[in-house]
Length: 395
Image (cartoon, rainbow, N blue to C red; front, side, top):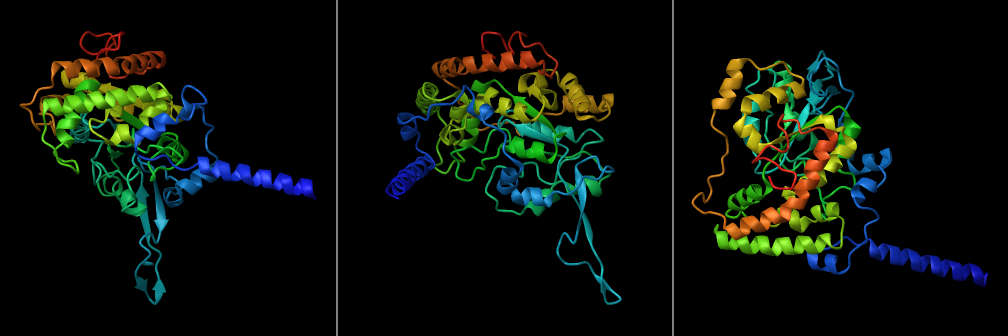
């Protein structure tokens, strides 16, 4: 009896200790770096076993319960819902009529990245006669607090499908690619690509990458005046922010796997948001659940220099017919949309540019190597084209 009591006390102590260690880390990065959790492998997110259907169902219940069986007549993943508005339909002859509503998910996702030209892409995609803009360019429903219902999200894609001739529609939320960090209290244990692959493994995705140094500078100029603590754009302030965040990121890399540093909320949501330019880490997470050939990777620079060639390949990837020459000409001649003109007269300091180039170089090398290995740099240009991307990690 005494032995059994002793074992019970030991078990209770171990259980209490385990629960204490599961407390979510704070947003402040310092304690996380002082007491790092040793990674179990080089890429912990890629080594974790896939979640069971029950876990996925629990974490994404609202979305999964809303999705029905896809009907083949629709080009987007659509299904019918009886009494979707819970009004039971109108009565006729004293009997309640069943009301059916078509609900849809997008056929593909424009994943981002922010300040890489997703708005310009959004404006030009719909120039193709088989593609329509969604009701809202960036619903951000998958990555932001649930202020709106899943029905609202699904209705964003219903109109182009039902009312406008069964056209392809997309979700262009620029946060889908990178957000949903593990130390975000709103985050699900199940990543967005995992739940999307559970719903429809045939989804296709488009992602845009830009020289990460230029992306960080544009991001700062755009969001600095719009931040909660509105600031005045200056090259000196940007240099101070970059210097501090580069130092903290390198300290993190010395103790954590790169993928874990990427998903630290501090590096994603504090200017200049350096993590958003480390493209390879989230890309590998998406590749885990979707085949590399389901993700169309293109560069902002090549889209600007050769729009006809890139859009021609993109439309082929999306499974729509070739765009007529006049449409490709119109896409190429139209001015870029949503060009960041904020503080256009302020120039990045040369020392800041070098600091960022040096920081991003090893991450760019990992990106280029992975794209070569999978042969999926699909905008049609060789990686070693001068001025675009080189083997030493410069862009």
